[in-house]
Image 1 (tube, rainbow, N blue to C red):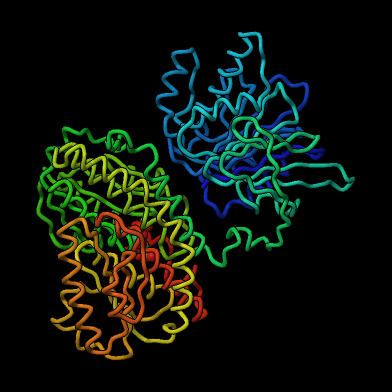
Image 2: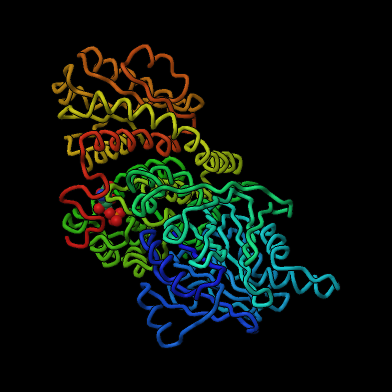
Length: 632
Ligand code: M6R
């Protein structure tokens, strides 16, 4: 995720900002930039560079900057490639206003059109650039009306036009020693410090580690807050301009803890980030009025998609599990047959060429060697390929005809969590889009599914606390067992596989995922009073197919309990029949069956996490595993 660091105070600003950005490097980025102002100068000076911070340091060595207020940014690309032009800060037409931004402006195309018609010139492909022009336009119009407005008022009016999510830092050379910050979605923290002479200095950042080496006195902005930082102090308002009181907190985290946002491990932080990751992956791609799904960036025309007769998906590990869940979504909603391969198997099985088949590759990193090899094979067989990927510009995206980016942000824990739920979200959107171009869903069905998808982040947010406590408690009883079994039916089967993978990779406990109905064909022999069996026993009671699958799964649960197996059931709130039948029930909120995986995976991730912690395992870097597997 992008990093922001800004400073107003007596010090030379460049070293303060560079040091802060370095401490935010763990968030991942692919370019960096800095804007600096000096009172009396007409324009703000900007330096930017693609790649790591050492590149911008080199640019600054060759073209130094000096000033006492400024803002820096490390960019994790979402719109537009990680180039110098697309790096932040972005300017308005005059070069007097600059903006750094973390998040996504959903309606940027519409605003860009409007601003272009008003004569604004755009020089980047980013959504952020429109914010600088919007602020410029607001100020220009106020000026023309004879009522000039200060920067904070213009920012306030501009942010009201934005839909999406943003953490913003804005400077204007006409108002030296001032930074305006705003939050709607991504975090913004404000720091209050004093230099060695006791003079006040003020900081803004996207995360505490960016300023922790200067101050521990931190204010966390809420959604809808603005902060105006000047040499005289900080004022807080809402987006209407009403003054706000915000409490300063004394942060006692050590720097490493701070990088993890106070969480013990990156994996836990990333589990908790899932509501945001799912929301960001959905933002700008759905209409809640019509139910339409827009995947314009996929660059495969709807007419072409409508002609596809089958889909081959190749992926590895967690991404393969997402792919398998995606098969159920695509087949159910768009009625196209889908085959899912382990990428490592695909090209060695002599697949059959079909020019009407669409190839899909799912990969968090976009650099997995097996998946890249499968893509080459698909292309050689004459298929177009679409990638679902979390890293803009990654290898897989270069040869793909289209990419649907997941906006999970960098995932640091080796065990994939938020990337998985973002992949599931992207697949659901893809399945809906396909269904819409093929006319296999009515507008009312589309609208209802889009509406349900938009409710998922809040449902996860609401359940996280309770489910965490429950899983932590369960871990006490189950952390010493040797084996685990995970069962699921239909779309819940790949989620059972993913639950088992999470447990084995971070706790080193042997765990297997199985289709619930297959138990009686062999694995029942394993069941005794020592074997924990996690069963995905959820249902959508409004869906007859889902009810039927649930009833069958319930019989499988009975087969396990009859043999004294210890069942942990994942169920939808209010499934009383299960509560009476099994030892432990973890409840999740209701949802249509195809969306239940996004809720089911949360307790499975947390159970694995707490068991691994109790066993003293290295949760973020499990033995023998790497985050990106770039060898076959
Ligand atoms: O980057 P990718 O999605 O292509 O990676 C695929 C697998 O290596 C990855 O999902 C792996 O299984 C994870 N460690 C699972 O948590």
